[in-house]
Amino acid sequence: MLRDYQIEMKTRLMEAWKAHRSVMVQMPTGTGKTFLMAAVVRENAADGVLVVTHRIELVEQISE
Image 1 (cartoon, rainbow, N blue to C red):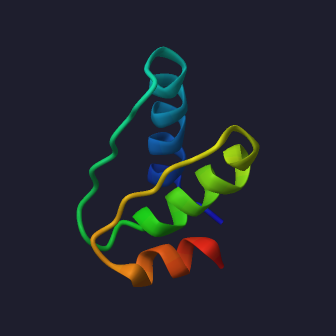
Image 2 (image 1 turned 45 degrees about the horizontal axis):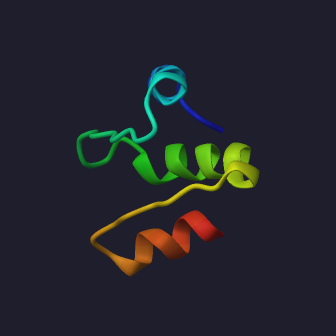
C-alpha cells in the first residue's frame, strides 16, 4: 500500500507520462521509491516499462 506522498508522486508521474515519452523520478532515500516503481510497473507492464537502477537488488525488489 502506497503512502499519501507516494500516491501524489505516482499521480504526477502518470500525468507527465501522458505528455512525454520518458520520465525520471527523483525522491530522497527512504521515501519508498521501490514501492512506488513497483506499483507503476504493475499497472503499466502491458505498455512496457524500463527501469534503470544502480543496484541489482532494486530490480529484484521491483520484480517481486
